[in-house]
Image (cartoon, rainbow, N blue to C red):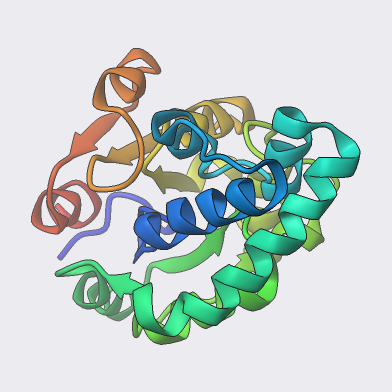
Length: 213
């Protein structure tokens, strides 16, 4: 195996962890509880990868957004063990990357405690580098990715970012990184294609071929 990049940063939700159903259900629970109705599911999925509290504030304003955030968090924590799932082939890919000497890490907009929980539940051998609390701005802002590289002692030209949404590709570009997109998460294929990632992968085997050659 010959790694194409010595450093690989990964998004979490929809990329390494199959948390999409959990996230959508948590959003809908919060909207029902706070405003008495559900929200458009496609729009909810478009928020995945961005800051949760900022998504709620943008949809409902500051006061209701804060209430919805609390409702979401309560439901999400109560149902994570039941609904969090992994993706076939992803744990094995991470192990092979580590065996090949690739430095890996997660850069996510998810809060650190639930992100660490997801990594454990999915059996992922990868450190959480950057969570929501660790940076003042979030994707598509480049600062989370640049902070991840800083923590690994890596240079921009050594690394790639792997994510499942257009916002991941845009964040990578803003940070000066190439982006590899996966299609098994929440992102809409046409939206991802429009951001022109370096590669798009439909399976873990395809992602392995891009990353390990």
